[in-house]
Image (cartoon, rainbow, N blue to C red; front, side, top):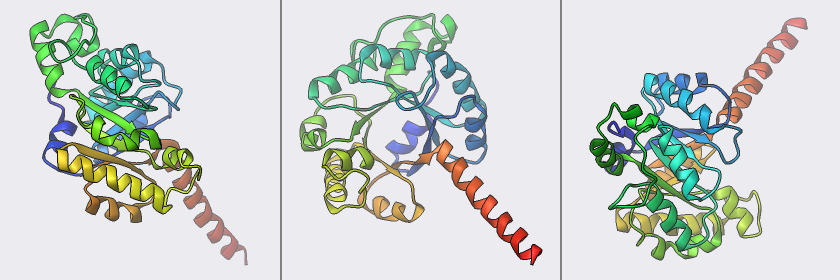
Length: 261
């Protein structure tokens, strides 16, 4: 596996910006790479991507110089393995509620002796045997990025135990699911949601683990930068497209209306 530039940036404390990819095809990823974004999260939880889609998306990302993380559909060993075998540089794991689940996915992301990832040299990640297998094992164990979600009050309350699990690179807080877990769906700026996330981020910082956050407004970023967050996902590709489409159409409609007077 090649050097994971996203992982290196995070280790150096550098804030990194990505977004979730739900559109089919690879052009969106190419554009984001050319625009200078740090990473994309290929969303197999809420998105409609198949494992076979990952190959083309990974190649587009490599060509455009942007890192790829795959949000898998469920916290299982097979989903972790298939995302990494297809060439994802990292996995982002949602809907975690127990320490046992977290241990399972962390172990599934790395080969022995660090874990129990399924062993196969005939994969995209191993360049179909062109990478010597011993090198593939060593570099994969070093370079794979494991992002685990904190998106319910159960996992937030277990943060001290979670941070004792080896192999976690980023703890990612999902304010929308957290708000639902607290019985206030959609109230992502509610004090209980923000205070919970800040507690998690503080614990991560003390342990030297990167923390992540979903935001959908630029003005929210400063607060979380100051709290210590470095792994940011801003919105979702379909939302970004909808936002700019709505904005441009609104401006043009206003010009037409003014001209018609």
